[in-house]
Length: 463
Image 1 (tube, rainbow, N blue to C red):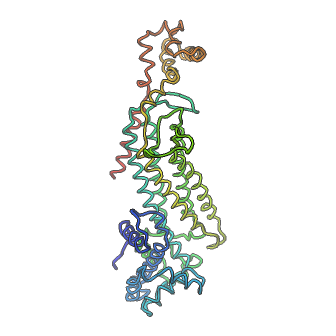
Image 2 (cartoon, helix red, strand yellow):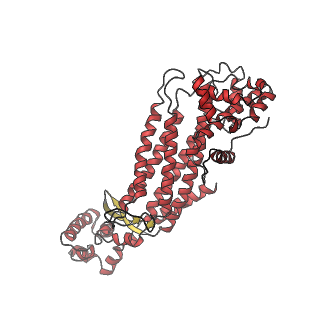
Image 3 (cartoon, rainbow, N blue to C red):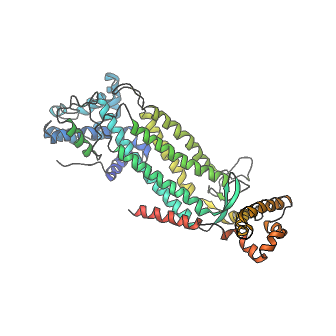
């Protein structure tokens, strides 16, 4: 038998075709299109074809019947208008589609369409394919963002700035060190999606009304396996997951984690763009207006949107998580609509993040200037460590607390306050003190950290 796996290229071609057929021409594939009715209807037919071909290979139904069903698996034979009219009569979503489709299939072959299967298995497998396709596109989005973050990090390896804890200047870092954490987190999110996709790929299902393969014959397990291979999925799990749905919950929770990653970036960029900091700025074009009445404002729109998505997506994931609690073998409410929504909204979030990170304006001079806001006090730790070798760690620590307080109370630089202290001036020269209080020489391994993260990510991208 000639297996026809639903590989990524074929799906993208089909999606583009269906978009044109529906009268909506888009520049690229989107998750939203995966959940449009024509694409869903095509997936429904593909699932039924995969079933018929598997049954044909195992001698359960005639090969001529499977061939006829396969030859008519085209969206032109399944008009949504006809489905809607049929649904008014039969009040069943899948039966309505079968009845419409059968009008184009040879009557004898139509007897073998949907042979031994149950509705929920077909729709569950369609949903699995939709989620699988969605993950492909979401991973593509994250890989594109990863490329922007690589560039941002490389360009700012030596962009010196204050490292802050609890909103206060702590120690000097580089902006590249900061963005390298975004880069590493984004890669972990790619790997999270790949991990959950490996489970989605095993979630195609053909197990019958109560999940015990009744009605599908003695070769049901082999039929299910072949059917999923025909669809480009992996060999399915042997358990009946319909009433459990933990894999879908894991997918939704993964999207929630991803949303929080971008919410963190949005929050950080909102703060860095504050008037008092001015270290980064979202590029909005030369004619953008921040406020209708306050022309001086440069409101961070993209960062604010990321924060909003980071609130919406976890709420949707909670509904999918709740759907893990169902009654008995196959009863309970299904969260298909929420899975659709959370997939689409996640794509919208990533599309919002792309231009923000690609075109982010980094005010390197402002970052460097802000290092001096505390008049050298950001280097207090360094001077303490230097003195510890000469007067002891505890003594040096207590002394520097007093010196820092003296500098703040008298509006002095750390250098001025230190030179006025008898103990410090006795143990350090002016030239030594000036070198110690240069923030650009006190960033630890910030640059090396970022470089190692870049190297790790680029190695993964080439595999």
